[in-house]
Length: 455
Image 1 (tube, one colour):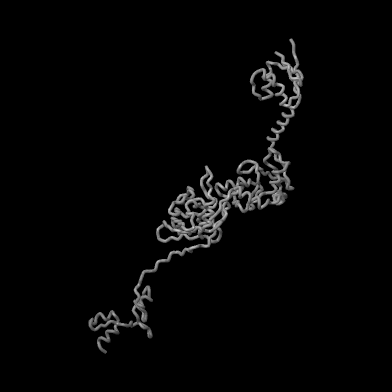
Image 2 (tube, one colour):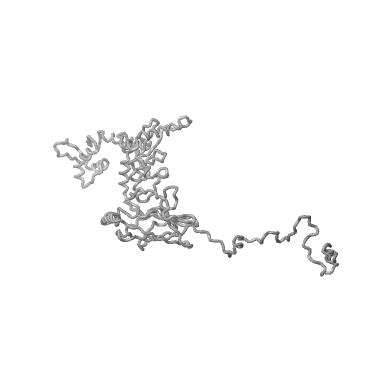
């Protein structure tokens, strides 16, 4: 056996004494088990070096950076529906609800929309112009612009995008004023109202109208815009429509009264009556058309006319009694309280009634008011009695009227007597004497007896 072969079989510690030229690198371990194939720790047999993109490395395709994530897709015409506005009748759709689509990576976005009018629509708008003197020029038939969120689950109310500005045919359009907020970090919002752009629209079927919207992109929310042709209504028109729907039968309210008063019948403290005001909580005066929303559970009503006038100025549609939503479509005229207001049983100076367990009602007169009323009646009955007056006579006047008895009046006491019993204007003493009898007669005094006294 050669020296090199012997050196290969020696352990590394013994190979140090052998010349370096005689030592070759061992390719297998002397301690390996039979059938074991030695591989280096860095690489296993039959494998390749790890590549992050193995397919590209095998095909020889150069490695590139990952593709950017595509921006979310916005539908051109999202399937959204605006809430119906009670003070507007929808006549037509000039532009279907369209998405406000961001087109670049900056926060402030801008997009332009186009719509046209038909000849009939242009004529309807122009002929509805209100040109009365002293009244701001406006149209009854209007072009209405609306914004909302892209939510398809339910009807959407008006909702303006952040930092929104609108130009119609390159003219700036006025929007509802921003409502300030005290919350830190919260941008002020505009009240949810439609925008009337009729005065900026070109009333011609041959010319296109453009609407340019600028807004701040909110990547958590999507917005849509719609343009409609509407007819504006007044509160009196809505009241007439409300009356034409009919009156809720009085038996319905009578049943509610019985139900509310019988709820606590078995308890120790049972309610035997309810107190309801006939004065509207809005105007603080007696109602003329009592109504309430079908979604409310209270018996107290409010005046339909005042409620509609209030929402005509600023649409909130909240019940003035419980502050819950009271939409126009849910308002009904209460037949029970309408019967109460028209009943001869109701006293003229009473604004509150008491509802009883059987569904009937009684006038509710407070004790203080009752005392004042009794006192007034006593004074009235007392003033109709004959009055005996005994006065000293300083001078004598006898009436010259033939249809009168001769009456004697004390000249020096006439003014005092007149001030006590009448509020007539005193011109002079003679007129006072002449009108004493008529003044006393107007006070329901039947007779005055004056007794002479002599020294």
